[in-house]
Amino acid sequence: MKRVERIFLGNSLTSNTLARENDVIVDIWEGGSDLYGWTLGSSCLDRVPVFLTRKCCYEIFGEVFEEVDVEVVIEGPESGVREKMGDVDSSFLSFCGRLLLPERRVCDCYRSFLRKSRAGRVFSPISRIDLESKTVKTYHRELEYGELVNTLPLHYFLTKAGLSDLSSQLTYASAYILALVGKVGLREFAKMFIGHRGYSLGLVVSYRETPIGRTVYAFIPFDRKSLRAELTNRAIAELKRLKVIEEPIVFLRSFYSKYFRLRSDAKEIGEFLKKHDVLLAGRYGKWSEVSICDICQ
Image (cartoon, rainbow, N blue to C red; front, side):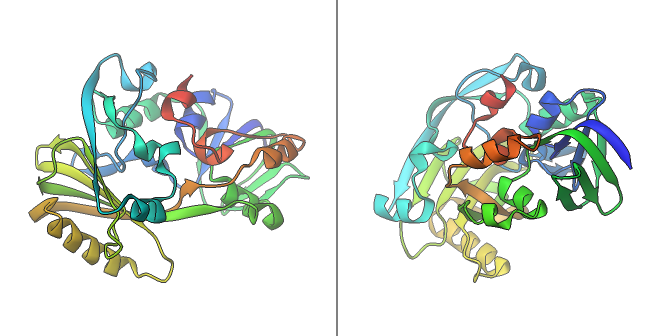
């Protein structure tokens, strides 16, 4: 068994910002962060839209930022939006007005940043975290640690650590997210909240232009009884009905965001884990709506 003084769980922005040469980052795969994006030819496409409220993270994004005017449109009753999306005022979903974007695509910036990291890496599914023996067991490796920094979703971490009683205290909302590229009817850098109860869509974001069309992101509150293929077809039909996107759709990817909205206060859990030399960091790890700029400080 190899001993490492400090292990980071999650190949996240937080881990790669804090980890040093003798540290080890453990995750299932390299592209685990939402910032990693989708591979598109020799480049990438952002997996989620990223808007910043201030200039930050210069080591990652560089010095040049584009200022954009983000408009919010509401289709249908606001009560319907709250029913689908919850209290959006307290999260990144509600950002609007004069916001900032890095000059390059976020995924390009992030992938370049990952290549600069000198920390060790282990990519393998985690089978167990033992707080008593201070070990992280994956399918292929077993590592002993002095300090453990968790940036993976706290709910997931607690289940792997055998603390299901604590994980049951954490509540969250899931979402199904589509990224599409094509001809878009919604103005660039606009957010449309959909309150119509007959629609599965909760939020649509018109984002950056690419050489093959503009990117649109569709967020669908996820019901575990729903089939993902059905959600994709229904969402595309609704986007066309709202005149957001037209044929042909030249790129389409989707993913399930289990921990899309974090609803619980995990402060007491954090205090308990600290006694076992486990620190919580990042949005998922702290179970708190911290921003990208907060992480880079």
